[in-house]
Length: 198
Image 1 (tube, one colour):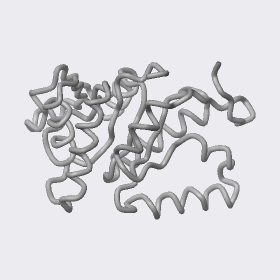
Image 2: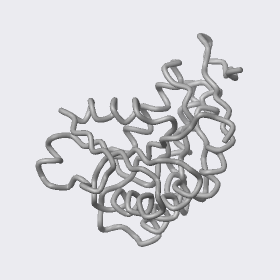
Image 3: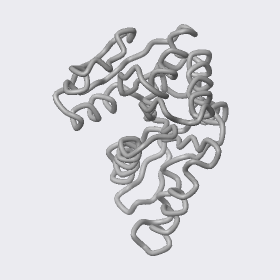
């Protein structure tokens, strides 16, 4: 790989009540991550897409780093098979830990938590706190309406058009992996202009 991406944070759902296509996508992404030398950083749960993703990464020989808030850990939903399972005091400290130990982020289909995490990563990049690759994996058009809303935010001047460069929309897990492998670091300067890091 031409960049330093090794640990990839994946945001996704812990629901066990989804259409099977979402679990299949999570499994495919996990397999491809491991096969391409990427470790997984994720929310630490053993349910839903989280659990399927983590198991696929483990099965194909890469490392799994889970980060779980204490409240959820007490409910017994933590993945004890993680190479490292970090327990945090709160959801806010959980997000900070996920960010600190990862080099890039992928948002799979998910609920309000995934949306919050994705939004925070985009804002961090907007304000120059991060230059990490951000991928929105748009399985079967799941994020189409959100992406239209992003366009509306920009069209009505709540954000600049340059922000479209802060994330990449992939239709398949393979496309997401290809983007990470070829990612060239970019950041936004004081005028929110996109700059490449040499």
